[in-house]
Amino acid sequence: MSKVIDGKAFAESVRQDVAKQVAWLKDEHDITPGLAVVLVGEDPASQVYVRNKGIQTKAAGMNSYEHKLDTSVTEDELLALINTLNNDSSVHGILVQLPLPSHIEESAVIDAIDYRKDVDGFHLTNVGLLNTGGDGVVPCTPLGCIMMLKDRLGDLSGKNAVVVGRSNIVGKPMAALLLKESCTVTIAHSRTQDLPAVCREADILVAAVGRPEMVPGDWVKPGATVIDVGINRIERDGKTKLVGDVDYASCEAVASAITPVPGGVGPMTIACLLHNTLQQAARLHGVTLPE
Ligand code: GUN
Image (cartoon, rainbow, N blue to C red):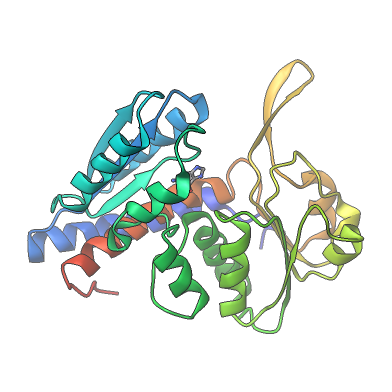
């Protein structure tokens, strides 16, 4: 088996499964899942993500609604839009693209979304459900990572997992998911003492810090599985290049499995967003999806 975990191929199979279930939901229950994506401002990376989300949502047979707002929109105006979407029965998923401009409080906006339509898993109720073993929505990027880990390693119980990074979007929910799988979990961050030694203990090493090529191969235990969440744009040899948070060549040499950048975690994130939207649509209508 190749060391490389092919996130692109895995994401394609997740999207195909979602599309099949969307077709079933339409045929059997006359329900077409709808995802509303809200983008505030002109951040180029966010515009690319939002466009890709729209394309893939439609390709899976779901409805896509895009709301593009000027950077100057007030928090109250944004909250009014969220309220409208909460009450719109054709909308089953609501995603507000982050980051938001600094005059808008992100947590107020996220928590205004009906948690049953939260497809990011960022609402406090879903965060609480994830951390108490409940059945809530799981954030897309960590969900994609855990799917790839389980696919590659099978049972994860008892493994030492180290997550480098403590963001609300990736680090913390990733750690919660690994704990749910009965791993022994360490969350490392910028204040961690002797980070290389902590990483060398990991059977599963997840890098989610947003620093290009920060983790070298000699921080990786031989035979470990490395999940690289970073997507960093750097200039090298006069060209723009995408690199992860791990130094791929040196880590690949010692790991037993590794996700590449691009083509690893990235494609899984949008596939999991489609998965979450489908799940929320079914849940809102009280429908149990076929296996
Ligand atoms: N910005 C970067 N990643 C994400 C994500 O997963 N969801 C949202 N809403 N915004 C993001």
